[in-house]
Image (cartoon, rainbow over all chains, first blue to last red; front, side, top):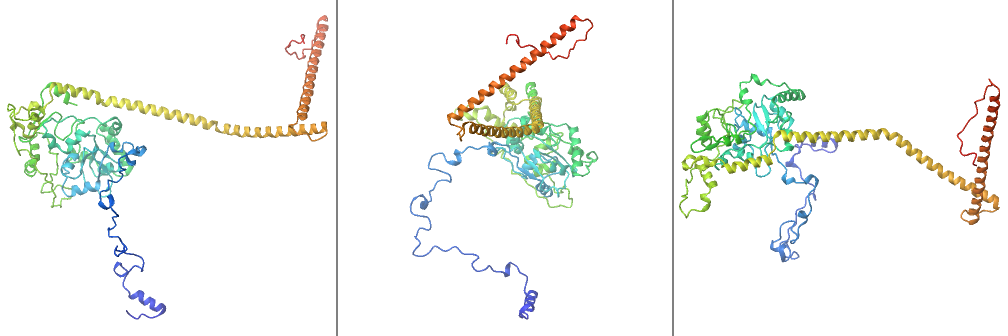
Length: 295
Length: 259
């Protein structure tokens, strides 16, 4: 060490010459950390901390919460308030704009075609389990500042900022309802075609969702398109961006493709049957069936 | 584009046969020449789903054979066969669509469990209007009550004040009575002693008598005044053209003559 003198000069010299403090050159004070003592010696019984006989030593204790057979506390106490029917509520697993941008950048999603839950599921961009109270995906704002893609996307729930982000980038977004049966078909169409049942009608949303899907603020699929246009302008006003004119787009036709409210898959109508081997589609001709299957 | 898609995603190749369709199912259809926003991206990650096991085993059961299990002779199984193998199953595709009975059931179910959009919107409108009217009624009630608040507050203070005054008054009157008793009886009487009570009774009687006397005197005074007025009127009648004094206060009689 260079001239470690006494007093202030010595201290200053140290400061000048010692290396920068980092994790590699500091040490805890003695007594800061204690090691767990090894259980060795004549005093410790030779049972390895398991106790003496019984379920504890033999490792046959029942599951946590079990009370010997009577209804345990965690099943006895009813749920109320916030936890009412929590296992039966609709769930919309989130899809962030971050993830969507990642999928687009990686080429896993084709932005030249409308994006719906089917394309996201089949490309394994999202994982949805329709058998577990999942009713679709929820477009979440995480990544709104870096999102930069022109897409036509259909989700089941979207927050205001997510809608604004998509529209600001020159895309379109719509929210649509799929009942659990339709969602199964949407997420695994080929598994459904193998059952030999014609494509059913998509059901209308339940009463508590009708207001959501008929509102233009959330770009619902049952809302008035003119109201949607007004809402687009209003949103652009609110968030302070200039709404791009879609009619000047070369992809305008693609961006304005929307499914019929009773349609589940793009390009396939209700009551149609798909022959996967011959790669053909069969349509019904019976007038009763046609009457039933049209919306 | 369709053929390249068919090559890359054989599972979805059937979609290419549709007339006016853009293959939107499973669109991880970004080609080698990536069409993402960023055109300089050459590396493209593609997910190729494993092919659906369609032709694994094309077993069409023999319905006439008694050895085939019962479930393989049902309509449901036939539909599944058709779904997996299509035309190659040799079955008539019309079995896949619902029969007349099934269709009738589906229609009944739809009618019972799926209300129309208009019906739902109507019930929602009714609910909302009821909520609105409840809210308005509540707000009106609150506003009216708030308007009454200053008065009510005043009332409370007033009541408190009056109560206080009353208490003080009773206290004072009691003290007065005790003083009177002391004067009359000459020593300190306890308010609960019988002498005191008797004394109070005496005082009350005296007061009552006084009041009665005053009342009678007043009534007689009025009677006198009335008689005088009548007399003057009579006198005035005799002389023609005399002015009558009509300034006499005439009160309604209360059986004065009977008293």
